[in-house]
Length: 79
Image (cartoon, rainbow, N blue to C red; front, side, top):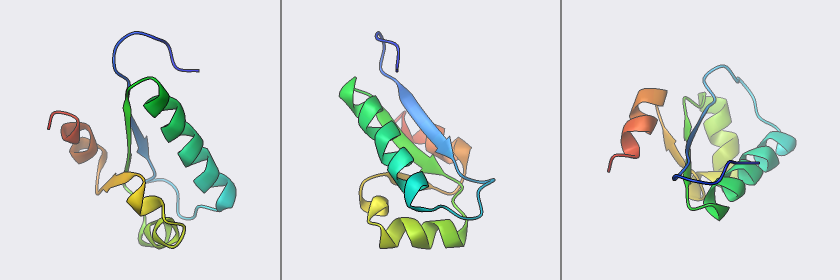
């Protein structure tokens, strides 16, 4: 679980993943839900073109903000 206290801000870096399957999509949603449950935020970074297509087909691109790189994703929390 996620420790209580503070506002967790999670970046999931997909830059080393060439492919994501349904179990991976479910794990992303589970992580997002756990972070949101404690008032935090969860974003994705570095998805390959194929991963980005799969995320879009699964509708995850509408549920998780996606950024080109981890630095851009981290910077999004300051907005």
